[in-house]
Image (cartoon, rainbow, N blue to C red):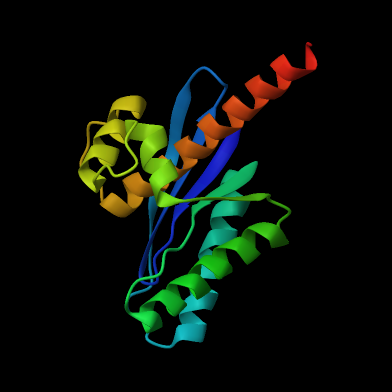
Length: 167
């Protein structure tokens, strides 16, 4: 199973390709999409769409996992963040890739066991699970965390279903 994990951002968006054979995780690639210098919002959204489409074409993920957007007090930035996330979702769906959304608290709990863990704790677990020793941006490690959360959720659902059908 190959998952594209996304940590949405209106200017810096983390992405990661993680592979799993149900027993192990493998970090294939990760990075950020930097659209800070594109001031015009429609062009920024188009840029994000094209970048995600290129990532999908290159790595051929089986599914997309994205952190769901939470709303802050700044409505304008929340609205732009929702649009950026929508660009990612539309890019995936246009390629026939199923989309799965996860709440931030669920991602943190899946990786650290605590839903209110800070970003440093999440990054520590990401690095430990994938044996990554290099420095990485939080956007990148957050995207990896989203992908790992999806893999764990997928495995749990499959285990439950396989045990339920055996009765």
